Image 1 (cartoon, rainbow, N blue to C red):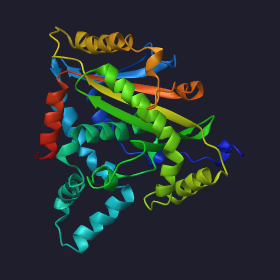
Image 2: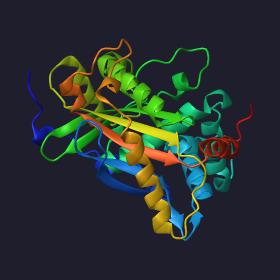
Image 3: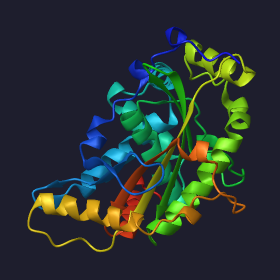
Length: 311
């Protein structure tokens, strides 16, 4: 099988969404955390300004990102034109109308799942510069349709490797870190095993640029081989709000909490849904984003309220 020549690859960076406003509400470090594979992973938490946690700003900007999550840039441009020319909407009201249309794809019965997938959508673009190549809101939000496959499939670009497929899974657990981690590992193994079949359903999506669409089709047909990287996001409750006297101590509290929780993960936790140990070659491609949140239930409640989702 031919491995794609870097010169034939597509630099997807110009196609990425701008999400700096969301990332600016978060603090992060890269560090070895004691998980496999042994390399630096990302620990992130809500940022403090002084002793004020940027909690409401984080929720506000995460909710704002639903428009980009649901609709591609091409779709947004088309919707804007139609709302002005066909529906006679005032240009000043276009963004609000499109936001309401995007919000209609979400439902209160799966707040944790949709919170997780919004994080994936944004974090994969920021930390890995990877473009979404699958949009599944119609399936994700339809309670009558069974959901399969990964939480996110993105396409990145590396100067050495060329294009890279990123598969992402996110788990949000108010109950703690270890159960979220174990389930995330099971899910990412399943996602890897099924991602080619899943891409067959979405490779011809119109929102993709012609170059990206052709690249993904060639990957599925076996004309080229692309490396596959795995990204797992674990959001979990770190307990009550810490009582610290400086913002640096606040940030340090969450970093240390993650490092402590990671000591509870053993080799036996890297297993698929059938209890089979994860393939070492696949394990080597894992990347973690670990996100401790104080009073996570409260944050999810605020997210639901900001989204205007009713029980």
